[in-house]
Image (cartoon, rainbow, N blue to C red):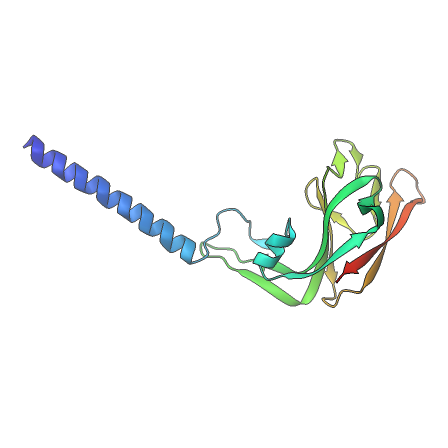
Length: 168
């Protein structure tokens, strides 16, 4: 009787393990997404942008710094979003783009830095090392002028003017 119980228990365990593996394989083949939240998306690297088939181009800025912050990557990508639901999918727009600036160090610390002391006109912050500008035309220009402005002054004094250049 104990042998029979042990055989049944062993068969059930192996059956459950096989089912779990099959479910994982099924979910990964259907592009099931565990990490991203539904809604608008912004890539954190050029590789991510390429993976989502949203990448458009790379930009550079002289000295690779904005307001003393060392940059990692600057790139344009098509705007894309993730559907809500269990089997959500990414959808890439052909009619709008976004410009993303990734820094090597934090743009802001608690109570100082980007969004507290200064900002780039027209840009929003997404996390401590990523800022972006959305709702752009997908045919991004060869150069883009940026203004870094002070948030401490009522008249938003210009701290730095710089130009991003497309890399070919």
